[in-house]
Length: 266
Image 1 (cartoon, rainbow, N blue to C red):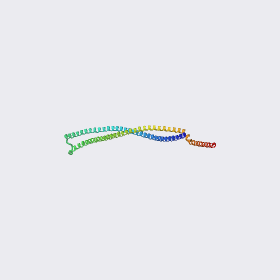
Image 2 (image 1 turned 45 degrees about the vertical axis):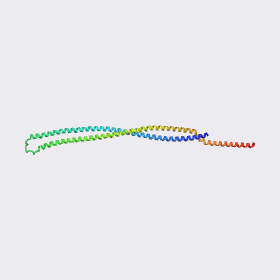
Image 3 (image 1 turned 90 degrees about the vertical axis):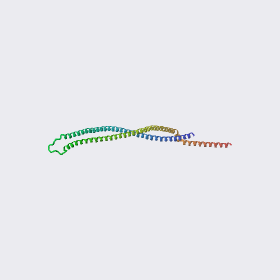
Image 4 (image 1 turned 30 degrees about the vertical axis):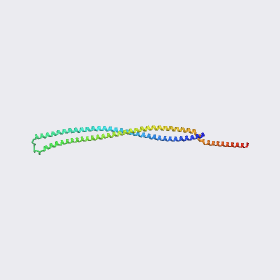
């Protein structure tokens, strides 16, 4: 009876050990797969964060360069406008001087008019020549003043357009930097969570590995305790059954012999 109990115990324990080992092996494989996924996730997040940081750094460099270019352009604009305004001022002064000069010359020529030698010129001819000369010079100066005004106006328009483009660029770039910075914060939080989960998963895997080791050790102990019993159980049971049968037969023979002796004595 003890041998049967021992055999039943061994069978049950081997079955339980196998089921538990298979279950822990599945857990181990699941944990290994999870660790690989988490490591890939952490790597991808790290690369994404590094890329975002590089993009922000590049945009900050572009902002600095744009600011320096804008400052240089503005100085050139200030110089251009100042030059054109100074040109206009000087030419206007020159125009006034010439106008005054030609006016006085014309008045003097009328006062000091002398009789010409030879036939007199047609009426108004001399005045026409003077007016033509003075008109050509003054028209040229007025045209230069007009060109200077046009250049000043064009410089102002270009400056306004450049300033607006710069302000739009700064606004858009800062918005992009802000969005990327926010993305970095979110991805950093995701990475921290993944790293924490990775530590926990590795610890769980180590725990499962320890349980598998314990199950393996227990399985070895079961083999030491049970292999002989399980391998020889049938033979031993057969031998016992034969012993029992032999005892029964012997008992029956003995019982029959005693009965015959009783009959003879009677």
